[in-house]
Length: 79
Image 1 (cartoon, rainbow, N blue to C red):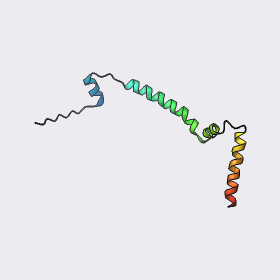
Image 2 (image 1 turned 60 degrees about the horizontal axis):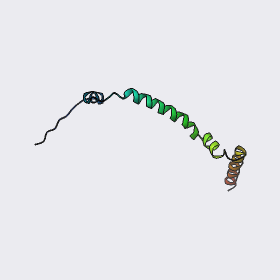
Image 3 (image 1 turned 135 degrees about the horizontal axis):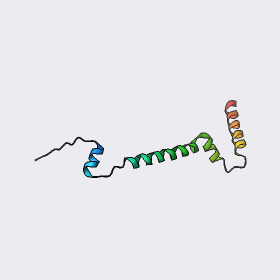
């Protein structure tokens, strides 16, 4: 014998039926917090942020990077 029961309800209705707590306010708050943190950290992965992080330990990072890229482009232009 095979019995199939199909229940058509929304997730909210199912949670209420089973007596589970409504976690939507908590989920909304956590997602807002997560989005805020992700936007704050996204600046670190910009090209300028990466260059600053990579060359922070060098005494003259900006000048050194400019000379490096200039020499690389000059070598490629000469070929």
